[in-house]
Amino acid sequence: MNILFFGPNGSGKGTQGSLLKEKYNVAHIESGAIFRDNIKGGTELGKKAKSYIDAGDLVPDEITIPMILDRLKKDDCKSGWLLDGFPRNKTQAIKLDESLKKAGMKLDVIVEIILDRQIAKDRITGRRLCVNDNNHPNNIHIEAIAPKGDKCRVCGGNLSARADDQDDTAIDKRHSIYYNDVDGTLAAAYYFRDLAKKDADVKYITLAGEAPLKDVTNELISKL
Image 1 (cartoon, rainbow, N blue to C red):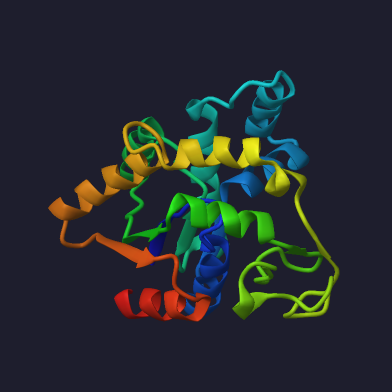
Image 2: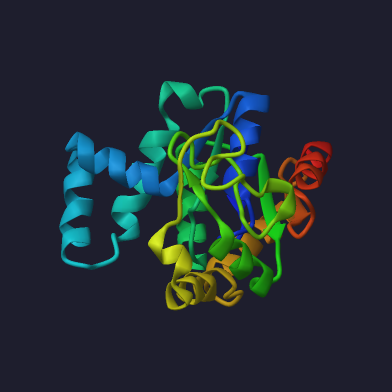
């Protein structure tokens, strides 16, 4: 099963992706990790990406998409993959769709977590990251997953808050890109939604992101 996952920062898509990874034995691929691995590994694509990053520029799609496709061809993706964090805009969605088809990779499911922008922002400011696993759910503003003190509610590891999670300007900037349904990330999601309407073999799933974590998981599993 090959899955494309959409959801604003604060929607819990990382947590849901981690759960799907365990349940369906699919590789959970986060776009940010692909950049880090290629740069750390000194790959040719990684070197090219680093030159743009060091200059403070966005990495062109001509580098990013081949990097993603290379990752999706790894052995751990043979049973399926879940791509999280890409595409970020409609142009990337079109190019990714074309590249997947050219590579003979079939997209089976697109998941969109729907969440009010203000609720998403409130969740981000309350988010705490576990030193052992960033996908362990801890949020001081959500009673069901509120940690006890400064320790992870799942494993007891130390917790910290990302600096940009406490920065209103940074949060608003990220959300302005995601909630843009003209040419931003939502436009990318809707591009795949429209494709799914024309292809019975592709499923587009929406989830109510304001629901408790377990309810979102149950809805996701039932729709898959």
